[in-house]
Length: 306
Ligand SMILES: C[S@@+](CC[C@H](N)C(=O)[O-])C[C@H]1O[C@@H](n2cnc3c(N)ncnc32)[C@H](O)[C@@H]1O
Image (cartoon, rainbow, N blue to C red):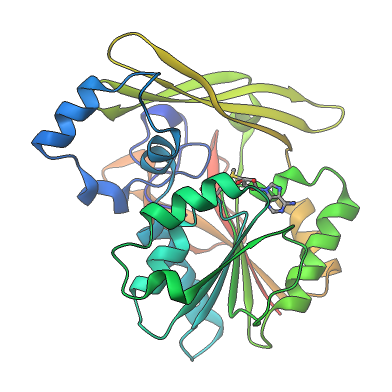
């Protein structure tokens, strides 16, 4: 899930992703028209739709699916047809996946029916037969699929809900077992010294609306990482704790070890390149890079082949 930002030293002002791996590039075409701008100006904490704002601030389905296709092409010559979005929420990636080929199928898995119902109403209406080609399962991500996917993705660090190594290992094992023989597993991740600093990072969504990523608490002894999203509006009102997360902060090396222990044959690390016009920013292009750059905050992907 990605677009530009290396989120090096100045994440909130970064021109692309913020700390939740929130891309912007693919949303550029969603810029509101005159009516949209008016609506934005009237929006406040009482009348706003938190899922709409979440998607606007956080999701970049086009960029995300571009990356999945690129990662798959690194390993396989065939075209991936079946996609499973774990922790799918509103399943914006499923919608984009289906829009690219009428034969494609998608599966969204989440425990919470509310974002799924919202996603069904908003993310599939413009995709031909979209709702018939997606299967939603209200279930734990460790549950098996009806059809084995070519790609499984766990985005926006959602797998950080697993607090122990055993839980993360069980999840990675179940993903591996569930994949098609040629399948790959894609996880995004976030790191760097700034990643665990307790701070609020505001970013403008336009129209006087502000998205705030709140790294509320990091407990070094346990890795517990409490975060939240707030939205602030032109009229001064705030939708506080629109979303809250209770995670463990996982480090890249720990996750890679877990993936190998789960039986994956090859795990590659992908980091973002540097914007040629601003060395503090990323260029939105993720390439295999086993070292990475020691920025204050960075985004990356781990891609694992079965
Ligand atoms: C951070 S949100 C991510 C939503 C979506 N992936 C996105 O990027 O917009 C995390 C989601 O994971 C779901 N979730 C948490 N634990 C889960 C589990 N064990 N199995 C399935 N879904 C889970 C929550 O209900 C929530 O919708």
